[in-house]
Length: 518
Image (cartoon, rainbow, N blue to C red; front, top):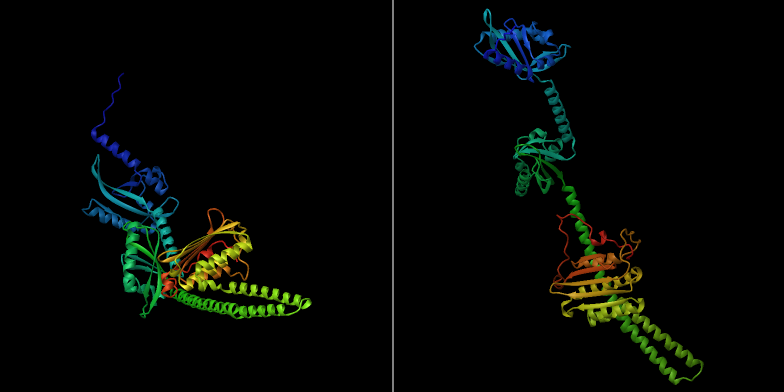
């Protein structure tokens, strides 16, 4: 017996495809008849409401709505059925509420359309609703809003002023910002241009920083300027500019720190430092002058008197008789010779007369020869100088620096030889002292109390507007390099001072190792 199968019509195929699409849809789809009975519910809607198809089919649509909203929904459906509209959204976004089988309510987004289906009795009106569960979206929205509130609270409680701008307009300002600008409320700043709140001198720099941040999205940049307070007074501020991530790249965050007091303290510190260095320069000059005077008196007055005394003793020895008196006279002459040598040594240590009479080169040569004799350290001296190009104050400073450097070398370096170089150029003098000793340790100990050798070198260099470095040489020993300007010293220009707008930093002496220098 042959089985006879009827081939499906195109309409049947279309209905099957439509059914499969509805069945696979990720959004809930429900179809009801004119009496609001559910005639179709897809799996997504079943999961949404927590029921099966058998539990929903044939039931009234009101079962999926909270009791308080059923009458309102029925009125909307009657109004829609009488209208000429084919489709419409059901309520505003987030205002439609559904109820799950367990009684839990959740927000819905829905759209409904009219559908006429053919039956044996003719066309019948049906309604198909497309549903989307908004509960997860609402949870995310609530989390985002909570995070926004926390961020706003964090900004509000920040001790420094913060504002956020969109273009030039302030769209957010915290309480610290209102206090800085002396306004009643931060709301008084919303909508104002940032350039109305800054002094005109700061406008070009801020425009450049903002444009740079928006285009390149670099890390935060800093500039200095002045804020115009509500009462018209100016406050010096430091502004940190950073872009905020947004698609249009128009939002910028600025952190404003009032640095007025800090800059005032810095200027006071710079003034105090300048005053102390002027005092130090005056004391050094007075000490050198006193040394010069004492050395001259020792050499001229006391030296001449001792020489005269020796001549008198020599004459007495020739006129006197031999024996005990002659021996005592000879002992006194020997004592006078020792005293003369001591006076000359003291005078040379105070200030060698040759520094004033013969110049720096002769004084340095005598100093290095005397150092070699006393310490046993071989000194290689290299001087390329023009005596007429070295002012007296520079010559004195170089002599004292070399004297201190050699003293420290003998005490601490454990060196066998060293190189001392002095070179004068068109605009500056360069002094280099390098030994073959142990150099500086990697972890230097602090200098002993009362150790002022390097401090004295540093102050002499700074008073003359020079540069000073102290570090280990490539060979392993210590290296001292001093660079002194000659023209400024010749014109007796004031000592250069650090720019008050630059940060206060330690120099090479403070940063470098100096454990075994005193």
